[in-house]
Length: 301
Image (cartoon, rainbow, N blue to C red):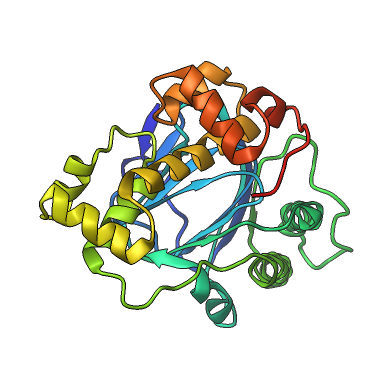
């Protein structure tokens, strides 16, 4: 059930200054909505399944190995991705160290949302270990050695002491540095018409929606013919070709992070025909969707 966190103290964001860390494994239907945002930064690292994160008007999906960071003071919402059975993720509320901002800046997608992706698979174990260390270190009082591990089945910890906060933030700094230094920042394109950029954002936010040239054109106040010409001229591909590529990427993420059948993956990604989906997926990834999910060989495009 979606939760309006501003109305429930148990799910409200912690006050600034605290470092709170947790690990959740949430089923379909889980959602947190903070209409007034939070006073602290929120860091999300996905370990399994798929999530959907929105801040202001900017939205991104979150799959395994994706680091999503939300700046404070803006409305945000995050939930299990529609169509995915679950979302497993680490989360941290804290005040970001100033040194992190330049590392994150290349990954800002708008409205204070930073999507650091893709982080190489070889680093996922080290990042996960840093989060587990954070969960244990948050309990350190300074009177004895830091705990080697968090108690079994413990999901949330608050770093109350200054020493515990510094240890936790140091581990989180390692996470931010590893992810931002190894992922590939999105290519910034100069001179792209703002209307084309808005259409691209609409496609990226929900590739499975029933977009058409007409609906996208209307969303940016252009005629369909003018929009199609401008989009193709500035991006090198037609709007529908771009939409199909986005849908295929979305389908690949669902195959990787969910147990949905191939038919349901096709429908959730905007493909009306499973036969057509199989054909275009194989053309893009070199193998049928079922083989892709099983980790079969792929050809590079």
